[in-house]
Amino acid sequence: MKKFLLYFSLAAAVAVSTLAFVPPLRAQQAGQDAAPQQQQNEAQMPASGDTTTHLAQTFSGRLVKEKGEIVLQDPVTKVSYKLDNTAKAKQYIGKQVKVTGKLDMNSNTIQVDGIEPLS
Image 1 (tube, rainbow, N blue to C red):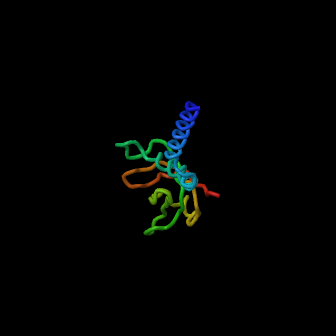
Image 2: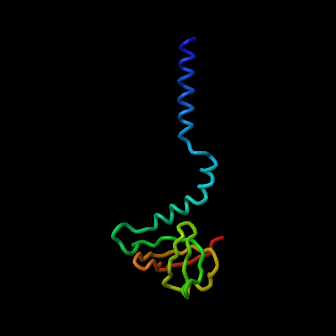
């Protein structure tokens, strides 16, 4: 009986200590919506020393006019990206879009390959 109580106490202590390290479920659920988009946008940054991404990447956000230029505002990173091709972007001003292109880190400009609306 003493061994049973000892094992039971040990198992309970392990279970309680494990639960102490698990983040609350509500915090996990709240972060699930923004986390994938934030990870996607963080992955878009080129390697250190590069000034332009070598492969086309996707950027999402809202297209707005800012200081006479059309820019993509990323709601997750709170960064605005200039677009090098405003002709493609004019029809999407004020809308949520996905822009595909290469990012020039020096000017924070996306060299636009394509733009499509998000649903």
